[in-house]
Image 1 (cartoon, rainbow over the protein chains, first blue to last red):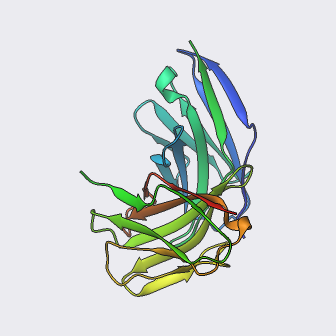
Image 2 (image 1 turned 45 degrees about the vertical axis):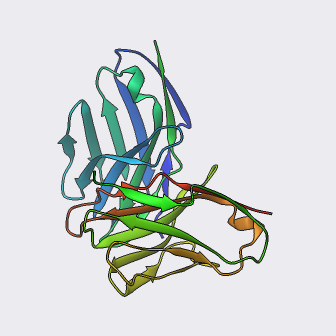
Length: 110
Length: 113
């Protein structure tokens, strides 16, 4: 089955700097890769997704990069703000099932 | 307001006492799913449903049941709860064919003693 892992459990970033959160996955057959943000006491919130046939996708202040060769996914957050402090999950899946990673806690230092 | 609601938000119960956690969405989503979240293990899928009367097992279905009699509701049933089912539970929904933009409920914290 799919296993999805993150490289670092906690990431501390200075406010205004860019953040990069990394993720590795195991199942080459995954169709989609997704990033979610979870603030304390809340359910996960969708940030951005990318199809397996893409290498890069950009959203508002976020960019997701997919490297299928090494099965690596990253989320880049530009000009990190205090409101970005949360746990970030990557997830991978096909049409029906989605497998989530453990999560990386992003701490923004004012 | 588009949302996924779960009830109860907090529940403390004893081993073996049947319980149901309700989940409802008002977005007319076909897909609904239940997850449990445990420290160090992330979110793990319990069951999911592609539409009314269509349900399937996720990665950790043992000890759980679900039903999908109406499109908006997807209750999670624990027939005989055990302490290892103490966890934070999330319900989620999404449109089919719209990628994986799942909308999550606020969570239900369950403690089984």
